[in-house]
Image 1 (cartoon, one colour):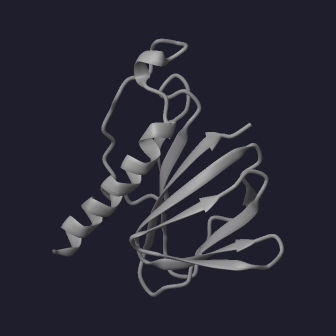
Image 2: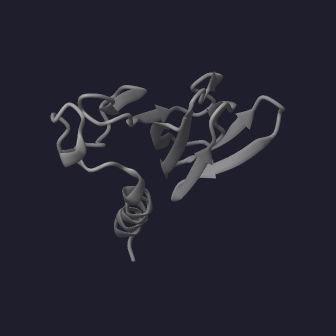
Image 3: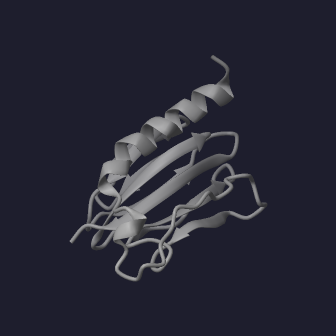
Amino acid sequence: MNRSLSRIAFVGLILFLVAPFVPRAAESATGTAAPKVVSLEPSGKNYTPVITGPPESFKMRSGLVVLSPGKSVGKHSTERNEELLVVLDGQGEMTFRDGSKLPVKANSAVYCPPETEHNVTNTGTGVLRYVYVVSNAK
């Protein structure tokens, strides 16, 4: 299986696993959320919004992050949210407040629970690209 097909299969699996937890557009309190397709093609920016929250979705937000080697997104907390990272390209690490680290690499998904301070850093020699999905957990 070539790399592109393998990546498509991986992202499809993640979407299949996440889908039961995402409310259907027909159930929207505002009645404006609707299915949509968003391009994940490189835009030349470090961050590209994918889903920005209501009225585009119920509570979910997501974006595409592109980090050059050695760059990071900066320390931040999930606060009342849970977060899923789907790594598309490259490698890096997620560092937590207590100093512990988790490696991240292409074709992997990383879950981060509520109230977790963390940072994502590109530790590789190529670009680190990932999609994050954030949803209110409390």
